[in-house]
Image (cartoon, rainbow, N blue to C red; front, side, top):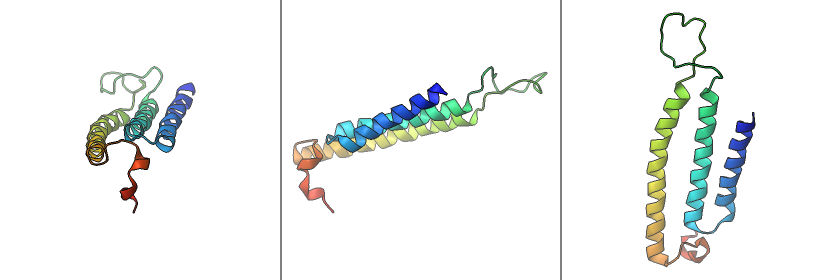
Length: 112
């Protein structure tokens, strides 16, 4: 139970970084922290106390297995998250080259 609470606290730290910070790099780090907390939560969902590897063998009827689906989802989410963070950083670098700062308050022409 305490690990689920820690996941929530980690998510809230990332959300604070996204909502309060004005630096693009700090906002991207906040998004990454939020993503890692969700991935940690998915890993915790698939964990079974005393579980074994889900390989069928003799006497597997009584054995507790760890759920492999969240692990596969986390591996896929890590790859997708890496691509999105690379895209966010490349956009931040382009904005820095144009405006000379990572501060979002100085980018007045971005208003829609």
